Length: 400
Image 1: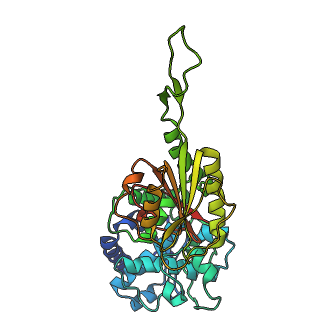
Image 2: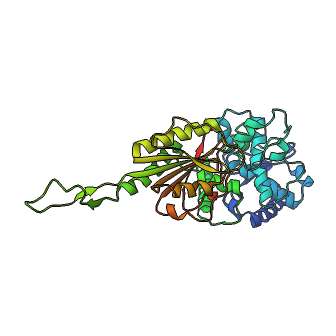
């Protein structure tokens, strides 16, 4: 039975319940975790913190500084630390707990702002760190200035894996909280709901990207790219037809039979050579793509460079590397049209880009029967692959 000296007062519990309801009206996708919170009265910490068992440590006196709207946002903020697995992610990168807490706050808070919430006080935002929105905690941790922003009030071990003196720890005889396996099950259910479109249109972009990757095996991008291209090649190579150009050697008397002809696969590789691309990342992706093309096609491989204009670099034997010589923007529509106008229309098109390009509204007529694989090369994970046209197969290449 819970020790009543550590449970919050009835008035505080009622206030927290009202704040929770207010939060879930705007953000219902957090309900599974918000309804599982256990409140622990923790005087003197000056804030609210959380551990990875969804025990919420509440300084009841500190609540006087917040309105109900403020308290709703604070609850969502703390729950987000657990939802996004910040404690385990901190351990994976061996991060300093205090700096990681700031990085995790930045990852969460821009999503709350996008969701229409007003953050109380002076919150940590990517802009306050001098960094762009919609990045991961790992990105903010690696790129923030060491002394960029103080953080005297830690959010608890649920945010950074470091148990605070005021936490109950693993002692479940007082307030047990939620078992860790059930916390993970709740997180998985939230991710599944978001992926299935249950809250379509209301989920912030970064949270949507988290849901897309949660619980899914991280397959090396090389394998994903190889499989995507190989499917296109096999579709073409499977189009076996009869031909009389070379009669079948197996014939019956004077009856001639046609032989089977396996078509060659024409492949085009389009490389975004604009100024926003990284030479190191391009080298890795191009080397992999060149190897796949040369092993798979049996036909001609055409290399096309594209920035604001598109032109053919080589046909047949591909160079071992491609230098980034372009600048400015990228016109991927021009590159695809050029590929479609080749003497032999490609059956497979591999596009290597950083994704910062406008796409044509529809697939060029000459590529309607082709398999188009778009490899998006980014320094950090989290690119919105939904910007890649539906008539392409998207593969995210993350080299961080």
